Length: 114
Length: 115
Image 1: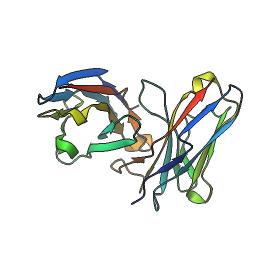
Image 2 (image 1 turned 180 degrees about the vertical axis):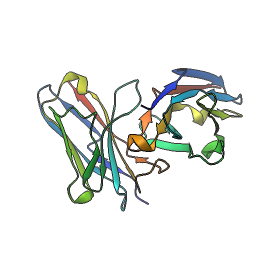
Image 3 (image 1 turned 135 degrees about the horizontal axis):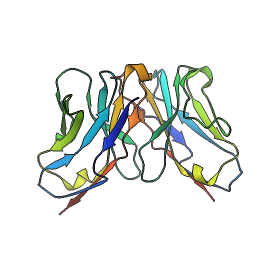
Image 4 (image 1 turned 135 degrees about the vertical axis):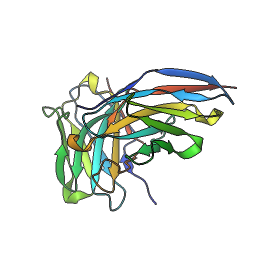
């Protein structure tokens, strides 16, 4: 069975400092992994996805994530936070033997201080 | 390109009443999903359609929830009768195919409050 654990429910950073949102997954087979962002009163938007190609994945708005199979991790990073990055972030796993069902983590709320 | 449309945006009902939500996916998208997102939690899949067939409904409380996707396009999700614990945002999403690397596009959701 696939599952996702987001290690921090809340992360607070200052504007201009690096962002690290942590995600660990459990999957029986080679998974696909995604990060989605949810701004207040807006729909979920895909930031980036890993699908067994390059392990370092670049997404929109300067975000990137690295797939580390040995650590079963897919942490999301950004070198410099912007106020507009404040939102809820979800790590998502999908695997073929689970019908490609998307399983979401519990979410991490990112707060950016001026 | 138009996104996933959902209506209504907000709904308040009393417990034991019934309610229905509507979703219009992106044109040409074969796969449609309904998710339930309870406040403070990640979305949980309720049902997944491929065209008008059900792929996965293992987490759908079938005693009170039902969903259909007639003609493989629009979909409706119904709750009858509603319980207090059904208060949540109901998200509809669609994707072009049915593959692990296929991006799902989400609507803005319907916020249901059961009182």
